[in-house]
Figure: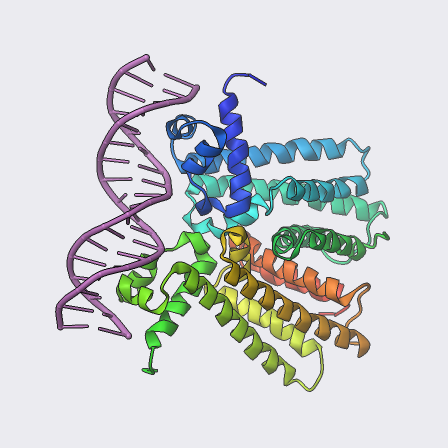
Length: 192
Length: 192
DNA sequence: GTCTATAACGTGATAGAC
DNA sequence: GTCTATCACGTTATAGAC
């Protein structure tokens, strides 16, 4: 655990938590430093400006996505476990205090974000969509899923639903998330 | 137009716009005052604190909902036009610059909101859900919609999807919103 | 009801010692 | 890499004249 630049990781972790609980404009360097027991300047050493922190966060999420999807891939080409992996991942994040989707948070501040952060966000979304689209297509071909229309559209719709569900679950209670995920399953022709 | 306290209405309108474009922590009294050509203190006259402004915003949305749904009701008990009214309303708001759903914005800052605002938010969501649930139930009974499962769950899912869609449309382009709405129609057994 | 002026504070950010 | 100390600025909010 005491590897080089452990502080950097801890800052990113705390910042992720704060981002998903208050939005990007809802937390300050002071929030991070006080909760971490480091000083203001230490954060600025690792992330010169808050925009740099935003960029690092997006890139961190992208790395997580890559790890997760390659882990999902391990299920021998079957699509269903990959989709279920996404659901589990979403619910686990919610339970671990990452209330809303990080990109739900960033979407609020989108037109204030500097260009590099936007581009990183776009890359992340493209990759996510490509992955889920492929999962849906594969699953439909293999008879695991049953749905009408374009798989890419369907993937977009599922991400939108999950993002919205996470936000509504925060207001209306955790049960909402599970309920809406069950409904996505239904709409894909999966029986519970 | 020059009715008493016109300024109050203008502040609310501008605040709504800013809220849905930047989130509640993303705009200041100065943003409102400069864009409206009034002074800081004038806003404080109408809304003593920013929390009062938040509360007024939520109550304003609630009024809009009541107006809209009672307008929808005018369609002689048929459910489909009421649902289509919701879709049109959502797309029109988006096009008019109210990028994301106001409650998508508030959900980000939810645990910083003072209790009265939360309660108003809960009331709004309850009413919205009741209305859409009834529309879905009625429509299913009358053979307008075809879907499985609980209508209340389905209503929750549709709101979550619309909220997420509006946020993704902001990042990924306006076409996303229409595409996802089309998919909701499909999942309700409606043919385009 | 709106203004000017200002208070009190939190913010992101930097300089320089260690 | 982390610290102390500090800056310049934006924020919400208030007092008091008009």
